[in-house]
Length: 345
Image (cartoon, rainbow, N blue to C red; front, side):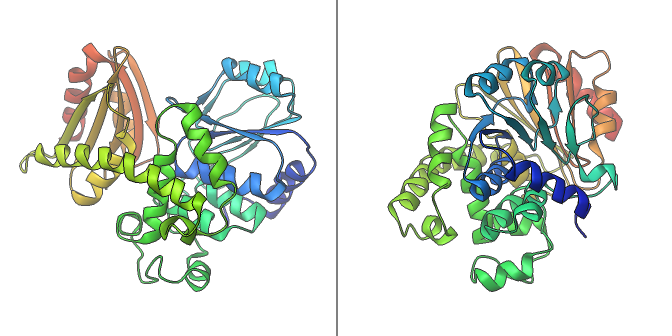
């Protein structure tokens, strides 16, 4: 089953092929990056801009669109787009997403959840349905978003040794397979400054095989892998620190760190959940007087609980059923966590 109708897929394909200077705004994770790579490599036109910090396209990004003189705007895997952005750019906007559906004026909006509320179908999977090429990129993006796609069998035939066909658990695929490692490499390529991230993205647009990276077969592959090793060493240090602070009798794992360290909230929360599937995970990074969090669970639907925990708390949050983001003022963090505990326990 595909996430969009054939008519919707064809409409996006037409919009994609009938443009000369598209600009792609994409989320800073494997799903967003792979969505961009699939569309860009299909038409070989335009530029990409990674949306870091908060998954929101607002008015400040309009200038980038106007300065580039883009003829169309593609927004990929971004949960929030402001009407002020659409009104400012005055160009066709094609928004491909899989989060809670939104409604804006003058936007071509495509979301599988408009057809089936609880469907799990990453933006990468949608983009692969459109372009039908670069299967290895599509697989990495889906696995990076905790989803094993319908084309797994075809992928195993074309790229042997990267995942055992018997694996059906997304967490196991992400943390116990080579294609999962590639998904994490993609995630880590987007760390650091925007300029550093986009330099890596440019290299990825020119790589033609996962083995170039995983086996370091080419100069471009070695460049990507070397950067991954540098960032991964910092990540492993943080991961070890989280595990040391796990309390067996506490259903919650709450870990906080300062903004002088690289942000790994999403990656840490995913791997800690895989290791401790019975826990509620909260990984929070303190930055600019706020606590920016990734929350994970298995079995506890998070968005309605987060909404209740935000009562009388300065902040916001939301996302998927079992994977959410939230941001609250530093002084409200303990109250927010206490509210979560009361709602769940």
